[in-house]
Length: 268
Image (cartoon, rainbow, N blue to C red):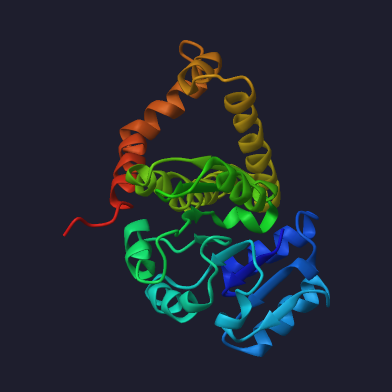
């Protein structure tokens, strides 16, 4: 499989580094672009000299099986216009990782070039940098199961892939992409509270990370419901239920729900 990544910023660079590090795609089968050669030089040092780099987006798409558009959302449609004349639409799959640009917007930009457009939206989160992303995947109308498998082959080595209809994408982004920040804020608060109780910051952070890993295993591997696991540690009159009630009195659950709601794009 040959891949072209248009854009070597935080997300594009993380995808390239991850694919090479996981031995999912050889560096010589990846072409990556950036506006500045210095950005590409840094990426080449990280991934090896076999990586193909160029500042010419249109040149970069030649021969790729998958073209990943990893530019800022406000640049995406302009980049599409730039590369569209060079895309072999019957042979190449286009994947946008830009949040906020819909499949219909991409499709409308490309419609005058071909009727055989195969497009996807893939929204990883920042854990892609450690091959632990939850990548959300939406397929365009022309995409077949075979082409879904091809895109999965790109992103599955970098974490998990969840396919869903685009109508649910923004809600899922609130959980997977924005959600990383929300969990980090919980971790920060936990560390601050634990330091007040007498632990060192390093001890508190380590214990919190281990607890998060154990919680994830209980929910994911056991298929448990959160409330069932909470019941196991909330003995009558015990300390845990006192702590939970204090958090709820301070608005813990409602704060999380309000935060998720606020993460959705405005309908104005």
